[in-house]
Image (cartoon, rainbow, N blue to C red):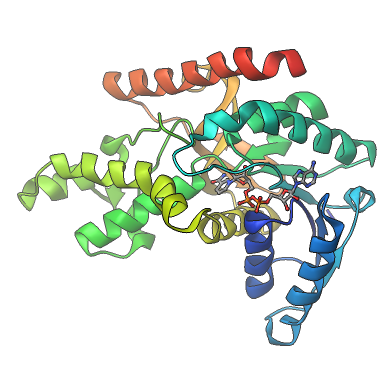
Length: 316
Ligand code: NAD
């Protein structure tokens, strides 16, 4: 990577433009290119976003572009494709979105892309698998946004519940970015104290933990019911991921990454805590899950394996 931090966003819809707005507000990149089948939309977005430049913290070049821009891009973020309708699960989008994602990956790679893919399109664990297989890139350079948003929601809700800063909540959502996700509560810390110890000492009912996870689980459905789509949260989460890459942070974020036995699972993408730096995924943080959590994690992985067979294998 040279000094010019260049990001291409493929898919200038709600999620793509929320990411663009977040990058602009936080001055995360030097060059931002928007690509979409709807070319007019990218031109409109370029104009609208550029109007904010005099008030942004960093000089930035924003343009409506094409796949040719991927040649010297550091990061391509895929946010294109169908989103959930009210009541629809993410997995129901698999077949249609897999075709779109395969096509996009091909277009990016044909332009000699040498950077890192970040995938946000749902079902994100399956779509990341599609990008890995159709790009031929090493697994470190194909990152799914995974449970990075779910984890942010979890930290926010725990922070509200215990009245502490969300920055001091160290808790992770693992597994599918979807209905089979899990929280390994034994590994949840407030500062350096176990959350379950705090609950016990404060006589707080342990059933509340399930209620917190249920709220996270239900959040996307509720938001989609009320406003049709979710986008600000994921826009901020993707921005955080991009910063971790450009700043070579070695930050721990719960992304979707390819499994090779780290959690006794292999051959799928799934959300686990991973160390993110300029190379992409540097390593996976291996938590010792208790029997019950490992079973839940295995269940989530089985769903991924079934769906790869059912919706994706034939396409690749
Ligand atoms: P949207 O409909 O607003 O935007 C999708 C965009 O993709 C549109 O502008 C469309 O023209 C474009 N597009 C479609 N096919 C394309 C192709 N072949 N090439 C280029 N562009 C193409 O949808 P949205 O709300 O922005 O959601 C996008 C995706 O992000 C959905 O799959 C949604 O489920 C997902 N999402 C993921 C998370 C997460 O946490 N990972 C959160 C929210 C939404």
